[in-house]
Length: 153
Figure 1 (cartoon, rainbow, N blue to C red):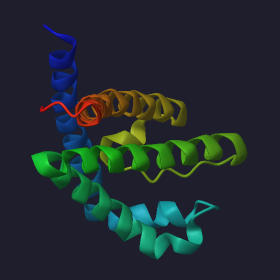
Figure 2 (figure 1 turned 180 degrees about the horizontal axis):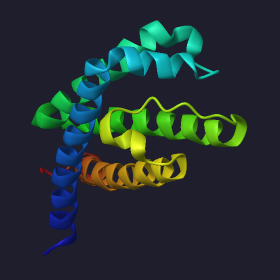
Figure 3 (figure 1 turned 180 degrees about the vertical axis):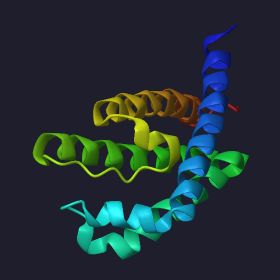
């Protein structure tokens, strides 16, 4: 199996894992919306925006899941997934370092993870997304090189 085929396979698997993750967490946050909003209200850095964030996050998660399923939006879906996971990972890092009583606003089974395990979980997905995005970058670089050399693709 060639390197490009492996990266394409990783991209497909990553997209479907993210679709499952974001659908699961988005739906569980909507089903238990009051619990999710209450957890956000206990967070000292985002409590003022809890009414907005409690709806915005699950909607964004579900929107990203749809984008990852549609080939023409997959790259944007991966970029938004990366952004969302980086923001959430930074939030977790901040909470671990500076907040003694950590409220968990995760949905479903994921609320059973410790904060440290959440960091590992997110880091694993961030790595998968970066590998997946590399396939898009290599393809674009190949096209750019051919445009520069004025040779037909």
